[in-house]
Length: 640
Ligand code: AHR
Image 1: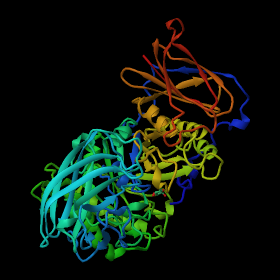
Image 2: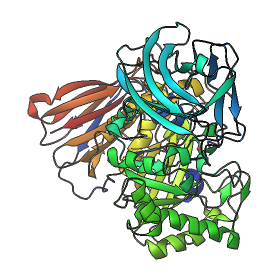
Image 3: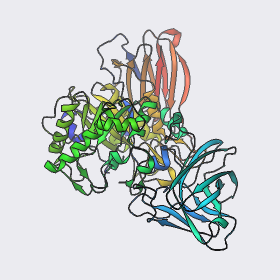
Image 4: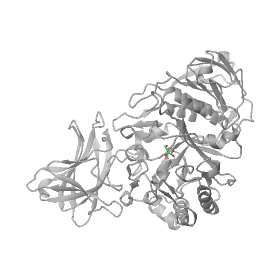
């Protein structure tokens, strides 16, 4: 959970000089002349996977986030289940009932006790993840019920404060006290709520139950999902991510795979199959995880968004203990079972379970990371052996899988690393130090591929920097990404992190984007736009650029693909700069620019900084373009 640079630990020996001038050293508005060699074919090859994403359940990014299910605490998961998000409706008592579990995995239900003489419809509400978004949409709704009841159940979407009833829907149920039965329905909301202050209610006829009780469990409410998948992603959130153009997804990213203790680790086979068979767990970020967004859902997510999966496997390290040596063997077997589940034929032991769970063909999986940040939380001394044990097992069966080592700290990893193993570096930096790492890969060994599995500009102490990305920080990110692009023959993958948050549950900020239960609350950070601008304008190879100045405050990189030349520019300084670029054999294209005052940024529901796009034409079709770069501006020129 720390946020220091680790790249520099590994890379120290290779860094030749710090990057260019800091803003304080810049000398006001000068012209910078750049001449792009569009004929060159010797530039570094650019990785097609350069810009991706990392997903970790934190900030309610999954439960109450990109996973579409809207009701909170629906399975009473976690080691200390309580009534969070529930409230009684009418003259009833509600309690968590561990004696009537819905299944072996969902080991409690909600008991609704109805006093004698109660009449009319009574029940309970679930207030969701700080509210339930209500839009004009068709909702899928299900619940499990136990107790003698033969009659009408009413489900509703209601404004918690306003009392506005957006949806009332009746269904007939025949419930018995012998077992839990599942009831499923769908209903339309024809009215959207103005805010997220809404709840879902389940009501039943109190006269049929008075003096007794009903148990209800695993309530699930889904708005439309991305690509219509059952148990899928929230359509609006997923599309917002897709628009940032990620090419890979590192899952399950970050500390959350590790577990606060060994039994609380992310256990892959507890996250597959029907949600009623998923027990959930205490997550590393101090709230129960439902694991409804599980291994198969991650893989569908990758497939539906055309992203390459980068799967992290649990490698023996938790926050509360480490397993190594012979004791690790059963966990190595478990990793091999996980890989057979993903990759095995549908008649193999684990592959057949995958087929039963809805995916006949093996999943494409080419990247596996062994653990997360094994230089931290006591992992370092045993990681070289744990890594080797797991690497050998995977490599013997799946020699084509690219294996990733979870840290670049040299004394924590085997020496030498097996050929081809990728190094995962994580770092969160404030703006100036991030710019200072601009050229950290320039002299990196070209045969050691790198993934930056988590990185971003994070200013936790500075005024205005605490909550959300701001223009200077995002400009620093752009400078750093120019460094990635210049070295993308080595830097194969990068993921700005963390990815997203539900604004009502902020644990770590900034994130790439966020939202709440309010309609239209999806909010891009300035970093989101930088990722989008860079990922949307990738070349296949880097082009040499002659310049009249050294890097700083203006930074640049040029690249080409079959049709287009891209020139990316960042002005990391407090003065405007004029860039005159010569790009032979081109005439016109687009100029996209993100700029604003140094500390400006977007806030939840308050989007002030967005990129501006305009057409640009070279003077007299000469291939000469003049770009006025505002202070802290980031620009992408795409010309043909
Ligand atoms: O992204 C937040 C945390 O930072 C991750 O959980 C961890 O891997 C890193 O230290």
